[in-house]
Image 1 (cartoon, rainbow, N blue to C red):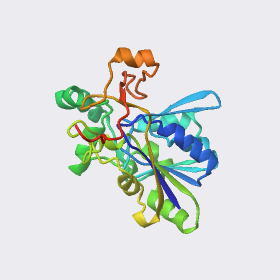
Image 2 (cartoon, rainbow, N blue to C red):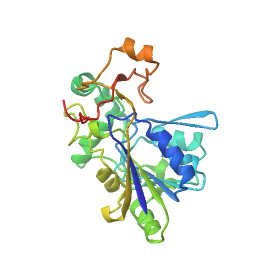
Image 3 (cartoon, helix red, strand yellow):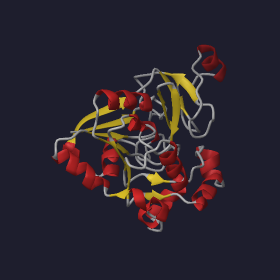
Amino acid sequence: MVTILVGGQWGDEGKGKIISYMCLKDRPDIIGRAGVGPNAGHTVVYKGVKYPLRLTPSGFINEKARLLIGAGVLVNPEVMLKEIEDMNLAGRIGIDMRAGIIEEDHIKRDKGSDHLAGKIGSTGTGCGPANIDRANRSLKLARDIEALKPYLTDVPQEMNDAIKAGRKVLIEGSQGFGLSLFYGTYPFVTSKDTTAGMAAVDCGVGPRNVKDVVVVFKTFVSRVGEGPFPTQMPEEEAKRLGIQEYGTVTGRPRRMGYFDSSRPATRP
């Protein structure tokens, strides 16, 4: 049985909190991370401690679960290895050998691009340029990085073996539907699709094995970076209401707005 959780707005919907609840209540055997890469931060608060995560699945607080990073996820080895060390995940986490690798050059290209950093409002984590290189078939993969070799695995094999054995699998998406490269507010989007279907592809799970899809929304919408935001409120109003937020990865103030169920996140 597979459950996929994704965001329904522009990210920052509180997916980490929902996943934390689900992983302790439903006790999945495997928790997989889908999505773009370390450009998306998930904040988990557990037993009074705040964990700002960039690659580790938010469900790591379920200490009996196997944690997996899907092949479709971009991995910054420095970020990944630090999270493994900080949260003592060495015996629990597996990285698909086909996951793409973010290098320093990707970060420089991201931050130095007038289009990405300027117009689009990229997080500067190198994900866009890395996905460009993946499409160009010139990107390094996790299997090419010596420091990651102790953690390499075949994520589709592990997940599908677990499914056949009747075990529970939870796949976490990142960002939100409005940032999908195909269905979001293009060009103010991320560098790949962010839907539940893509999350399944990221981890190598077929659609017939997906039992439930959970889509997370929040009552006050937020958005990091540039792009259309029809219900955006003035920053002063967000502060007055006590809902001002800051990005987990960038630290930038999030643009805040009112919820409008009649207007899809992708409509300008």
